[in-house]
Length: 128
Image (tube, rainbow, N blue to C red; front, side, top):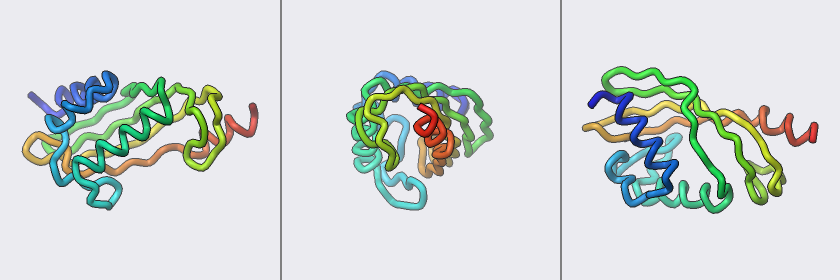
C-alpha cells in the first residue's frame, strides 16, 4: 500500500472517531510540531479536539506523497462549542484549512508539522 492510500485510511480512522485504530497509523514515539508527544499524547490531543468540536470531520482537499512524506491540505466546516484557538466560537459554524506535513517511518506517521489558518477563522468571527 502506498502512502496516499495509507493516509486516506488514517483520515477515515479519524473521521470514524475510532482512536483504538490509531496505533495502526501513528508511531509510538510520534513528534507533533517539534514536541515528542508520543502516541498517547497524540491520542489525547485528538480526543480533546473531538470533545471541543463534536462535528469534527477531516476533508482532504489536496494530497501529495512520495515514499516517506505526505503533504495535505485539509478542510474543516464545523461548530466548535466554546473557545477554539483562543477565539470564542461558542457553536458558530466556521470553515478553515490546515496545511500539514507527515513524515512516515515503517509505514506509520513519525512526525507531524501542522499549521491551521488562524486568519481564516478570525475573519469569520469578526464578520459574523
